[in-house]
Length: 339
Image (tube, rainbow, N blue to C red; front, side, top):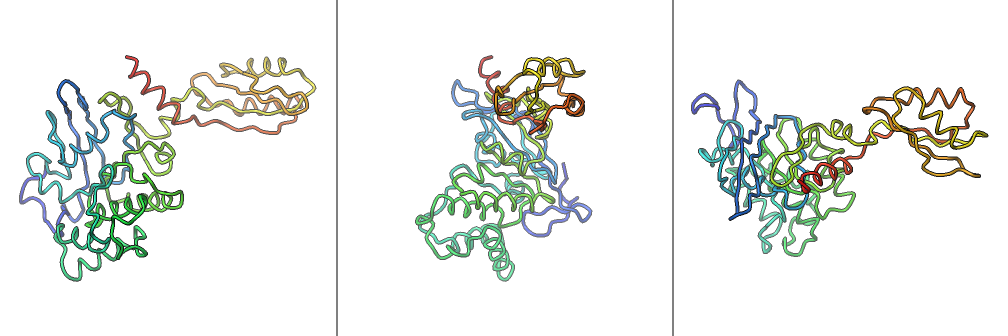
């Protein structure tokens, strides 16, 4: 932890160490109980600057409760959160200066206009004068709110309200950004804009986002933590998660041939490294579709391609399955639910 006096402070919410912003988030053994229910049970992980962490789990897994403890909205029954060197429990104001938070549902002052709300948030964050005007203008442009800036928030669509919520979270350029379902209610174009914005900010920040949209993890996250029943059950990159899918590196093959489908299937099954070959759709006049699964997720595409060429099969499709995150997610979380 950085001791008082060892760091040099510039703008509110910015900690400078040797000229560099310290962006680091450490969650240690968080526990939260609501009566007899343990919502969060010994959750620990760290996130470094430059990482975008996808925080995943089924409904009721403890995601939002964990995020509320990280941001100081809930007090944990046990454990600690350290944001850029400051403990959220011991130095809450210092920790929260470094933090931007988009909560679930994006609660906002509905009778305020977008511009008035962002001015208010800027004042709360310690910005004044030209610095405030510049930062508010920059944020409006980043989140594309110019067309509704003078409109009362209560009259906005769900998607625009979400964007206003995101704007207030990033207004002060925080080191650590906590986003609970940031693209909830957005149309496909708006989702693309928000994902691009998250990627553009990622280099100098710690970003943690909760989402139910697994394609969002693939699109923007460098790492994913999955929790279920209040516990961390997986922590790795999206590619590492995909590798746990039962069809990771499986080959999908569509061919026409004078050979019978059973003979083709037998030849594929006999290849080194192949665990199984299945006929997915009988050909007749159309091509026959096969799925060839490897042993232990190894690459078998070269062997399959060579066999097809040497056997004179007319190949209409050949591609490698990476593995589906939704299958891995479902397998992991349902295993915990049954235990």
